[in-house]
Each structure stands twice: as C-alpha cells, then as structure tokens.
Length: 94
Image (tube, rainbow, N blue to C red; front, side, top):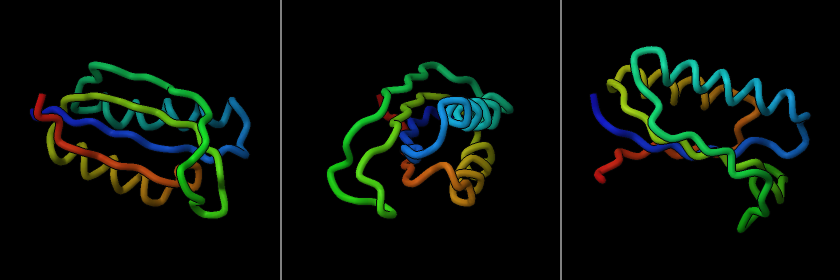
C-alpha cells in the first residue's frame, strides 16, 4: 500500500448535511481497502480564481494509505460527483 494525499473542494451552495454526506462517501471509498491517517475539513474558503462560476468552496484534506485500485475508484467517483468542483490526488512521499 502506498501513501496518498487528496484535497478536494466541495461546492459552496449545498447544505451542511450534504457536505457531510459527500465527505462520508469519499471516506468510505478510501477506507474500503485502505486506511485514513489524517482527515481535516478546512472549512469554506475563498478560491484564488473562479471555478465553474463559484468563488468560494469547502476545502477537505485527507492523507491515506491504499492500493492503486482504491485510488482509481476514488478518482472515478470524484470525477462524476456533482458536489466536487476540483480535486487533486498526489502520492505522499513524506
């Protein structure tokens, strides 16, 4: 298993319950065949530039260990998810 870091931005116009549901959904994918080492919901912040006509977003940072198959599934789900406006999954070398 390799260590990864994912940061994703959730749309600012959805309710807090929907934000928590999206976070739980992604945590479930990462936990299924992997292990979450750090999870932090950084809250609503201003974006540096407009993304999909949004100026704000809820930032979430997660460090986890998983197999490449789990990461591929996570990326697939984030790509089709309406709540996520931007995401980045990187290999954690630290």
